[in-house]
Amino acid sequence: MLALGLGAGLLAAASIAAVADCCAAPFPEPVDLGHGVHVFLGARAEASPANGGHVANQAFIVAPAGVIVIDTGLSAAFARHMLRAIRARTDKPVAVVVSLS
Image (cartoon, rainbow, N blue to C red):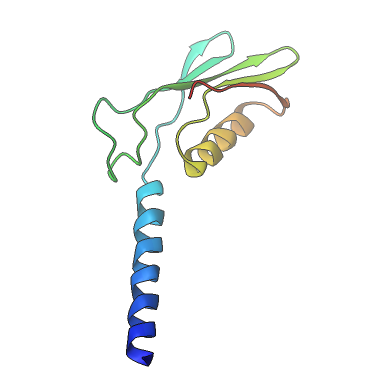
């Protein structure tokens, strides 16, 4: 019984590690299109662990009243990456989030 419990625990740990690896893929830095517009270009491929599932485009616009986010991506890891990129460019608050999913 102990061996079964230990085996299930190892399987759960391996599953958690696989999910973490999936979402730890390097995400692209935003491309500055000018006038406060920044775009994250998704991979031109099927979603995979190598691209972290980042296959769509997302954007943000630094506007006078705050930041407008256009699509936050498919994972919490990408959303954190996007927020770090926004914070590296402005301290304005996120004013609007447009969800495309």
